[in-house]
Image (cartoon, rainbow, N blue to C red; front, side, top):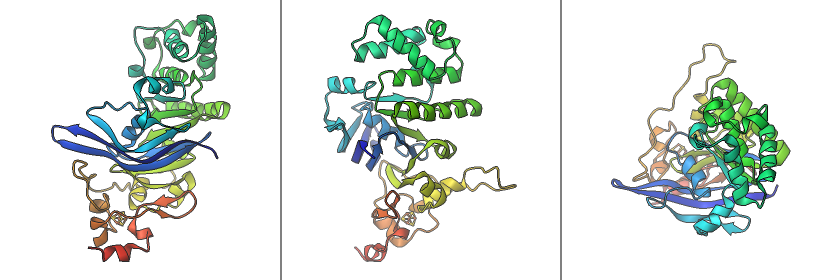
Length: 331
Ligand code: SF4
């Protein structure tokens, strides 16, 4: 499958009064045409910073992309100037956020907000832009779109507002859609409808989606591939099946053990004890070692190599690497 986006060894940090926070520490992944890649992990693992870096939306300063590359259509987004980035944002790569109310301007009608994106990026007349806005309202399943275009955000329910945000993100037919926790603010029924909508839209438009979430239930429903992030690194990645049925990293296993299951009566949920490391001074070895029941002496001293378990399945864990013994003898 064609790669539409490649993130290579990305390092992102933030300067604070307390020191430098190393939020993203060498993240590498690619996104292929028409697929959904889910990036999962606890709060603070670097998943949102990674996605905002792709859009170059992190405030610089205090944030900075220290090294690495983000390749899109032969261009390295980390090197582009703001005026060139503005042409890409919304037109080629779009983003939707967790809370649809804060993503919408309460003082403008829905029609004006959807049309604004079209008129900014495409040379269309107002009536053409309106026609396109109506098409998008239909695509995301908003009934009576003609009259709804004249309404304001507060006149819509939470689920409808998220549909509008999705319509705004897709109006210029981007190749990549980044969805950062798009269903977290919605109740379960609406969440299911929005996930169905993602699948439907992807089938119709072929858009590639990066889904940022901490919710493995959502991942199980829509992802083709999954990257698990911990302490600013991708510690395991693979197809949805590999991550759910053959997880190898103790952190991924811990995440899966903490999901409630309806098919096992009286099942106890097992939380992952402890908390993530301080990213002001991240450990030099495996960042999960303080919480890992399998931690060995080498884990604290040396960060594990990436082991390939299949074409898609990769894990950073010494348990999977025959070089652990050699690493253990390193000074
Ligand atoms: Fe646990 Fe060591 Fe694997 Fe890290 S490298 S997850 S500490 S076994």
